[in-house]
Image (cartoon, rainbow, N blue to C red; front, side, top):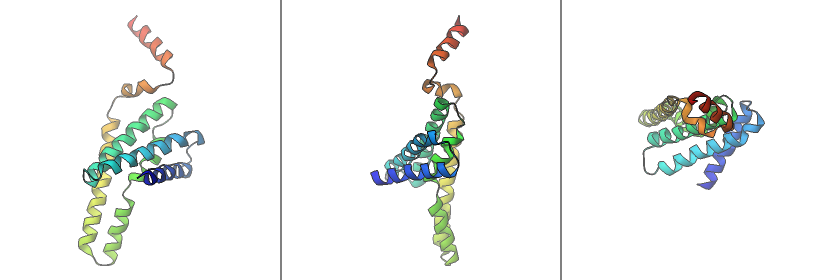
Length: 155
């Protein structure tokens, strides 16, 4: 499992490079992608693949929002590359392969599993993006400024 998590982290950094993410954010991207894959690997034996994908994507989105608040940058910098290990590319491939080779039952099963994983990712994104921005303020670097704003507001 350690090898898989490291591969996911490296793959995430590779996609970050491909998407033009600034170099200083590579460690965050790798950590987020690796954490999402670790969550998936831990949950997949206990839950079905779609449920494990949902909870892993929730973690990825949550960590992406935390990184965005901490670094004062758009969340998509971390989100797009961090979600890559969870995308059901193999399921889509196998669905197409089975369709071409006229194994329609297997094609339907692989395609439906891929669609369930994709929907799980979307639901994870929606759930975490519904959280108010204030939930993520605890990771801000400028805590003194936040305290000053609070005292001005209360005072």
